[in-house]
Length: 250
Image 1: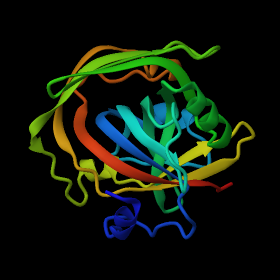
Image 2: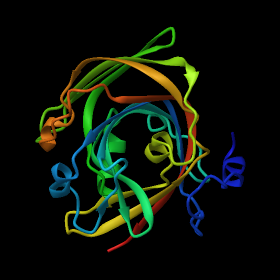
Image 3: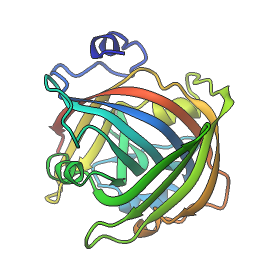
Image 4: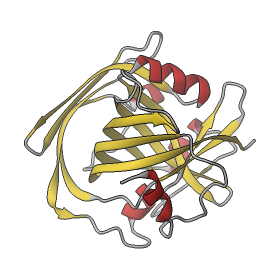
């Protein structure tokens, strides 16, 4: 779907599109949302003071999200060789600044060193270099990530996941909607300044999913212990995303 078509579908958004032009487009592919409940007092010390923890059912939630990116390009420019695709794995929770719910990232591991350096410099996001591999066998994705970033705490992830035959119906007020229908991220620079980055996409086409975790130490560097329970899982085949430049919040 082209960018104009994506911009025409906005009824599902909780607030209007930004008044400025988007600057980048990406396709997100073979994405798994895996979520665990976490007590708010465990996360509050890890979140910038200006952000409010967002909760569902009285709990905060930690998400581990592996996926691949394709067709990355800046507005008005063609895809650049070597820069138009990468693999990413992010660890996130959910926050609010005023009335705007968004995503806060603890880490984003990625396979493209140039994109990692760019995102760390211009988007103030905690990206890390990693050796990553994605293999497909039938409908199963075998995903491997080993952090290689100099000076960073070690973190590894290996899993197999696949969509099931049942589509996950995203009803108003559901946990599926709460996890996924968020249209901005929040980031803090080293000086403590808070920024918001807006995005837009169609409503997530979610499927129920199955996950086999082989190893996962992604939350260990943050002192977060995941509960010994089955995560809530959702899978998306593909979604086109538009991205706006960061806005200074505080």
